[in-house]
Every structure is written in C-alpha cells, then in structure tokens.
Amino acid sequence: KQEVTQIPAALSVPEGENLVLNCSFTDSAIYNLQWFRQDPGKGLTSLLLIQSSQREQTSGRLNASLDKSSGRSTLYIAASQPGDSATYLCAVEGAQKLVFGQGTRLTINP
Amino acid sequence: EAQVTQNPRYLITVTGKKLTVTCSQNMNHEYMSWYRQDPGLGLRQIYYSMNVEVTDKGDVPEGYKVSRKEKRNFPLILESPSPNQTSLYFCASSLGTLSSYEQYFGPGTRLTVT
Image (cartoon, rainbow over all chains, first blue to last red; front, side):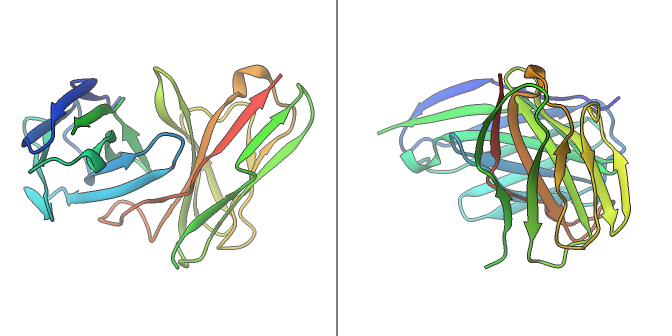
C-alpha cells in the first residue's frame, strides 16, 4: 500500500528565504507526482506535475524534483513571499487515484 | 473558465436524512473522483469514475453512492448520513489517469452531520 510522507509538518520562515519542502513515498511504481497548494477553507490548486519519466519541473519561483528510485520529491520555493503561506500537499498517482501526504503548513513572515 | 463546481459549499444535516452533493466540470474530462479530507488522515479517495456509467470504489466507499449518467456531472450521495461522515469533501476531474494529466479540484463542501 502506497504511503506518502511530508516533512516537516509545519515550517515558518522570514520573507525572502529560499526553502525546500520534502515528500517521500514507499512504492516507486507511480505514474506521476503532483504538488498542490491549499489555502485555509479552500480547494486544492495544482502547482506542478512531474511525470514518472521526468526528474524535475519548474514554474516561476517553484521547482519540483522527482527521484523515483529513492521515493523522494522536493519542492523548492525561491525568494519566498507572504502570499506563499499555505499548506502544500504532494500526491502520487497510481491505481486510479492520488495518494496524498499530510501536507506541510508553510508560513512566510513579513 | 475551466472549473469544477460543487454544491452546496456548506451543509449541516441530521443523521439519516439523505443528501446529495453535486459536482460538475466544464472541461469535458473523462475521469472524476471524490475525496474526503479529515484532520490527521489527509485526503482519501471515496469513489472514482473513468467515464459515463463507469464507477468504482476508492479507499473509503462505505456509506456513499455515486452515479455518472452524464460526462460533466458526478454527484455524491449519502443515503443515511452519520456523524462520522462529517468532513470536507472534494470533487476532482482530469482528462484521464495512468498518465500525465493534471487533476483539477472543486472548492470543497463542508458537511456536518449531527
């Protein structure tokens, strides 16, 4: 059974810092990995999708990497801003569903 | 605007009173699914549908029903809601699965069963 773990559960950093969020998964037989953002009381917004054959994807200040063999992904956020404050979820796709991690609650302090 | 809509957004009901949460997408997506989100348990899949008239159970299907009579709609039915179904529910859709299609999520429905 696929299990997804995100560390840390919460992170608070000052504005302007670069930061890394971690995601690990137990079964490397995945089709893709997605990173989502969830704001309080809101739905999920897809940030980046990495296909199983890819090693990284970039969108603006965000860069996500994928190492299937070790079961790990990282989300790198450059030059963090207060508007980046949210919960970040990673999810791996396999067997007709996404399996989610518990998320990292990120707070960027002005 | 491409989107997934859910209604209602908030619902308080009593045990045993049947309810339906609607989900609709305007992107002609084949795949749709329902998740529930609970503190400490994260998001878990309830049901999914690969296409019209094709549905299957996810990880936590007990107490729920779904139907997919039209491609755009995928309602979630609680025939006899119980307090343990109090949760935040999300509908999602994508062009397909087992590939590289991005999942789009609705805004969520917060359900309280008393």
